[in-house]
Amino acid sequence: AREAGAVVVPAMAFFGGLGDLLATAAMGDWQEADEVHIAYGLSSWHPTAGTRLSGAVSRERRGDRRLRYTGGEWEYCTDAPPTLTWDFPQPLGPRSVIGEFTMADVVTVPSHLSVPEVTTYMTADAVRNIADPGTPAPTAADGSGRSDQTFLVDAVVRRGGVERRAVAHGQDIYAVTAPLVVEALDRVLAGRTRTTG
Image 1 (cartoon, rainbow, N blue to C red):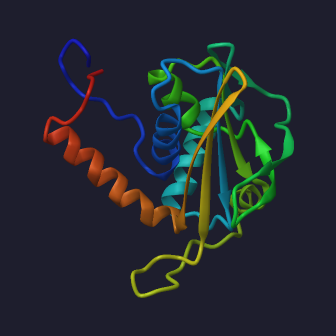
Image 2 (cartoon, one colour):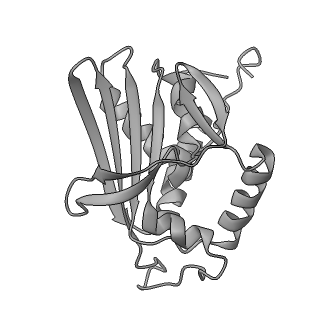
């Protein structure tokens, strides 16, 4: 792709897009960092049929292993992911999360940021929702068609003893995907990208 001058955008939805953008913003003028942490605080996760299908394909490809990025390398893991508490900014506050929750960010972030450690987290309640085959699809809660789900994404970048943070919060992870994808497509088509490959 780089030799052909083509732009490849591996992920530009809520997952794989927003967290990466926040980590990049938090990185700011740093050329490298020690670690990136991206924590997803979802009030609930009512998956669409597409989300369920994507998850099934991802699990099949990974052989039910988790993918993590540590020591500057990707590795598959079969041990149980850690459960811990993440101190989200308000209005969410401290929440139980599943660490090393496989997300696209562990691939996208180190592909363009110089960082040897990338860890992603998901609120435990949301993980229970997505794991339950009986969890229904999202339903519209307002006139715009958005669900009542709320989210807070917390990206923390550390270098030495310094920590930088970028946060985004809103309503309905699926409603956020459309503007992210449209903006990315507009930038690619208008030639407003910084790199190819």
